[in-house]
Structures are given as C-alpha cells and as structure tokens.
Image (cartoon, rainbow over all chains, first blue to last red):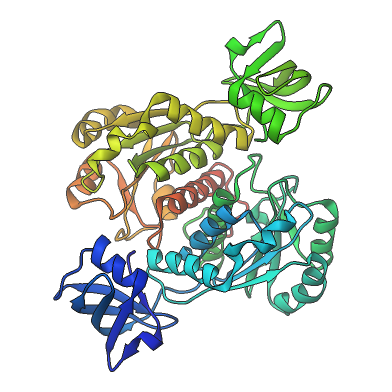
Length: 255
Length: 255
C-alpha cells in the first residue's frame, strides 16, 4: 500500500478516523506509530499527508492535509469478457493501478455463465479490488465497473453510446492482420479509445462481426496466446505508448 | 494449456508417452479421447500435432508429427530483483509466455533475504512455471533462469559479460527523467536489450549508481507505482513495440 485511501465520510474537520482493514494494515504491516507521516488520498479527491495521532488494531486517527492532484486518468476504456473470479480480481487491481477509469465486464460465448454469479462481482468486492490497485499506484479516482450479462444488448445498444461521435473502438483477435500500432494510428483517435479483450479461447466469429458492425477494428497482439493477466497490462501499456506518441509526434520515434 | 509440451526422452519412434500432470490434464481437463488431435511441441524443438492413441489418468500415448518452428524469441533479457515467491511464480509464467529467454533473478537491498531459500527457486519449480508460460503461449524454447544471491558480483562481474559489445542496458526507476521510448531510441540498440526491474520499494541509490557505472541508463514507466506482475508485462510489451518500430522504421509512427 503506497497510499492510504480515505473516504469523505471518514473525515471530519481535517481528521480521519479509520477502522478495520486500514487500521490493521497501518498497525501491523506499516507499523505506524503516533507522529509518523503517511501518504494519504481522498477517494475521488486530492493526495497529501496524514500525521498519525492515535493507532491501534481497531482504530487509526490521522490529521490530514491534501493538496496534490492524482495522476492523469487514462483515455482507454476496457471492454473485457468476464474472466474467472480469481483472474478477475487480479485484473481489476492491475487495471485500476494503470489508471483505467471505465471497465465493462461483458458476456461472450466462451465465458462460463457461472462467472456472473461469482461473489467477486458484488459491488463491495469490486470496490475492494479497485481500491487495492489505486493504493498501489497512488491514485484516488475510483474506476467505474459495469457488468453486462447479455452480449447482444451490450454491443447493439450500449456500444453506440460509448463510442459517441469521437471514440475509437478496437478489438483484440489473434488472427487480425494489423497490430495495435496500425489500429491506433491509421485513424488518429481524438476521443476515448475502447479496447475489447476476449475470453480464454477467444471471441467467436459472430461476436467479432457484431463489434465490427459497430465500427470496431480488429488488431492482433502477436502470435503468442497470453493469459488475461498478462495480455491486459501488455495491451494497455502499448496503447498508452502509442497514444502518447500520437499526441506528441516527432519524438521519440523515427520517420 | 494451448500446447502439450513433450520432452525428447518421452518420445520414441514418433510416439510420445506422457505421465502424471500431462496425462491427467489431457484426461480430465481437455477430456481427450483416442482419435483426437492435439497441438504438441517438443521442448526446445518444433511444434506440430499429436494423435491420441491411448488415454487414461496415468498415461497418454500420442503419435506425433512436428514441423513448425516456435515463434521468434524476444531480444529482451530481464534482470529482476527477486520478488516474493507467489509473485515470482506468476511473473515467471508471464515472462515465459511473452517470449523472454533469459531471466536473471538478483538480490537487492530491498529484497527479503528469505526469498532466496524459497522452494519456488528449486530448478524443478522454476521449470514448471516456465513450462506453464510456454504451454500458454504455444512456444517450446525453455527460458534460462539464473539466480544471483549477491548483488555486487552480479553487477561488477556478470553485467559486462552480458552487455558484451552490442547489448543495451536499461534500468527502471520512477524518478528517471526519460521514458522507455527515449531510452531505446536515443542510441539504436543493435544487440540484446537488458531491462532491469527493481524490488517492491525500488532500487536504492547505490544500486542505481552501480548499474549506471556499467552503462545502464535509467528510464521511468510513469508516475504510477505498479506491482511487479503488472510492471513486467507492461514494460516488455512497450519495449517490444519500440524495438519493432526501430527495426522497421517509417510505420506505424508519425514523424
């Protein structure tokens, strides 16, 4: 935990009172003592310092001051075929730590239906995984996660709204002819970029066609089949690098 | 498992006999039956097909034919401050799936000494995690992992040999002024590229100076602090994208 995330209702007159996991973590893992100064962040707010006034297993009291902005959010939005729960947990923290603020978990032919009743999808469980990612990355802006148990209404009804007039949609598929670089630079994206990543076993043809009919373009990550907890950070990292270059052309790539 | 990896000593006259984990996996997870054809690969060799002749929990017999080359290996080599065992296991599979063939696990000030006696570092355990990564990515070339419990001899004695006359060395550090793109393109790398990634909590100054004295340049992955199972795939993916662009300049980036 590189940041102690605090919610507004835990703060009164510049003093935060923490319980449960946070208090235990401060006490047992960070071994904080009265007088210590820790990095804190207000959920969906500013980052600053907290002076520990009181600390025990049950309760931590910090005098806080926050004036720094969190790092810039990503322009990327993730559309992810719902992975199995253990992988979902891992990926949510990864994605939150990389600054993604919109995550759409969707159904697909090769998603097991039972995954949609997993406890990992309960709002409290989702928030906990996202929070771990933010605390890791020193960010405060909580990502929004939406869950879509029906594929077709998501693609037909929601995708047009998500794309709006300015967003770019890209869908990962091993057999695509183009890489992510071509996908992102052939038409310069001006708004958000939606990246769709399939389930283990991949998208079926029908799903690819549905996305394409909404304007999504296919791209490949290369010949290697990666697990979702490897593919997702790899893809986000490449897309961020490409978008940074598109916004500031000239360097560091050669013509 | 997208590939059944088979070692030379399991094959005789074009017939592979598998036991234990592989047989159980074929039987229980893949539910293979006699007559099924599965993708197989020979460790450090070719990729092809295996026709299932016999199958039980204990034993699987496949008639194999292999004529396809595995995907190209990466030019990247990873120098990684030894992570805690659970993370090491995860990262080894990730790195193997991304095509890295040389991994140096090293000591650093902020590495817990007990990690070096973890069972995850036993040769059999390492091979198992690498194998999972290869089977995921449909690759056959087993990466080499070396373990260096002493930091100073590694940097002073081994790094010069690893760099040779043509390799490029880069070390990740949050406070570096340049990004990976600058690090890789300011001096066009012609040989292997060594990427050094620190422990949770980062490198200490002495370590950064030691690497720099051997010609390593610092770069930053950005303001966010990522866990090693996120930072490693992100970094490898960006470096691969940059190296592909350097080798084939012109596309897909703009001048």
